[in-house]
Image (tube, rainbow, N blue to C red; front, side, top):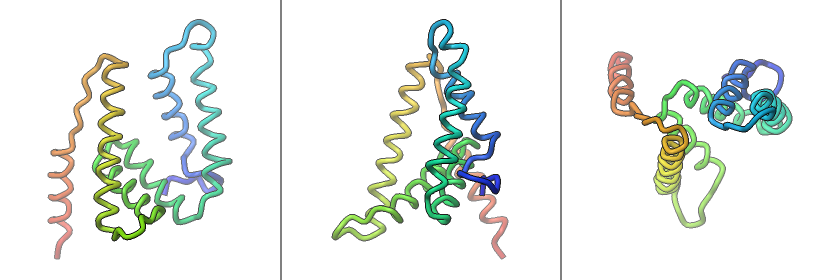
Length: 147
């Protein structure tokens, strides 16, 4: 789990990394551009320490794993963890958990695609997800651990 043993789910390094990414993504003018990174860091820390810390311990642990995977660029793992969290939190009447997982998984994949598309337009850079390589590496790792 990514917790520091104090509050929230993010380590100070993860909070800083997220603040830097937001600072790089959001371009303001003049004085505001000089301080926006600090503002992002403060907001992320407050949200983590004051908001996320109030969640149940098991949910915090799941979210910490999700953050770790997302920051490591493990898109497939992060999508699956997010789907599992949603399936555990949201119950759709008359729909079993397998179908819920498919619905939430598709919604998360659409959200990831939309975010990547927006980032490509905003930054002018092409983003390539290495999902196929990640799946192959995961399959090899899984086979290597079989007895």
